[in-house]
Image (cartoon, rainbow, N blue to C red):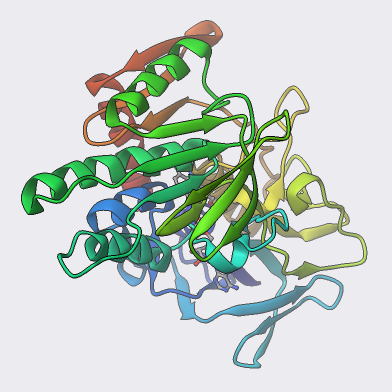
Length: 379
Ligand SMILES: Cc1cc2nc3c(=O)[nH]c(=O)nc-3n(C[C@H](O)[C@H](O)[C@H](O)COP(=O)(O)OP(=O)(O)OC[C@H]3O[C@@H](n4cnc5c(N)ncnc54)[C@H](O)[C@@H]3O)c2cc1C
């Protein structure tokens, strides 16, 4: 059985590392990078140049999976073909697609041209280099940063940047830059409850971050953004760097007559994470639209991508033994948002559907523990 796994992110890598060498299984993992990126830690790389990647080859030892470093150009489910950027066309018996998501700029004028994203290592490097440049004595441009989108990524990024700015101000004797966090919705971190959100908001204020909720980003130029409030008032905010973390959509690379797509372009999958109408094709992670026990879309998080990947890996092994597939039953074990350094807020799931809220150092430890659990699960 020839199996292709596309993408070595949280979902794809979890699939590959759950496999064991089997005589009639020939599995290829196709990934554009030679490494796995801890996407959930990109904000740390953007602020502090922290190492957030791991070479893939050693992780695949003992799995029987071969690694092909290549870029997927498109996938045709009707012809069972995967075309690579170098022109090669691969066929498969079973396909697992885990190519993640891309930034959604919502066609806001000038945004995709002028804003940096935070989706891959090169984005983090670009932000890190800007901060360094802005703190050099020969930099005379605008040093302020505007971040659009106050979800998890935006909040984690601004708090980490504020910490870095405080450090550089102390070291180099230059005044700190202003960080503006712009959010169209009425609140930051909509995934959290009011008490935890309040704590996060106070932390942002202590850092001196200018939080503008209810401000829709209307336009971006090379050196400013225009935001608009509900009453129509517009304000221009000058910026040395514009970063957009305001939305994602599924990577649009898979074609097939029978494919059904949901919000954000996510491909609808059944209870075994297979594309409806294509029983040999699994879509895992941000690209797939799986439903939870209440029939609601499973969130696009690393936590759920990892769960889906592990289950799919196990199911591929079951298939090879002629056993029945296990259905997907998502669980959200908790949610933690880092607020710079050793600070975080979040909650952990307890028995009987109770939630334990946490703030400060303990929440930080829990966030690190979940990252460590992921690291251990792929070894
Ligand atoms: C800064 C930040 C912080 C986050 N924090 C959290 C958090 O605290 N908790 C949480 O649960 N989630 C968090 N997320 C969300 C989480 O990172 C995503 O939900 C998760 O990465 C999705 O996993 P995935 O496997 O679907 O995609 P990805 O992890 O994005 O993996 C996709 C893989 O496919 C590869 N690829 C893409 N296109 C191609 C191609 N054409 N050819 C070959 N390879 C390709 C990519 O290189 C990548 O390795 C955060 C995201 C960001 C950006």
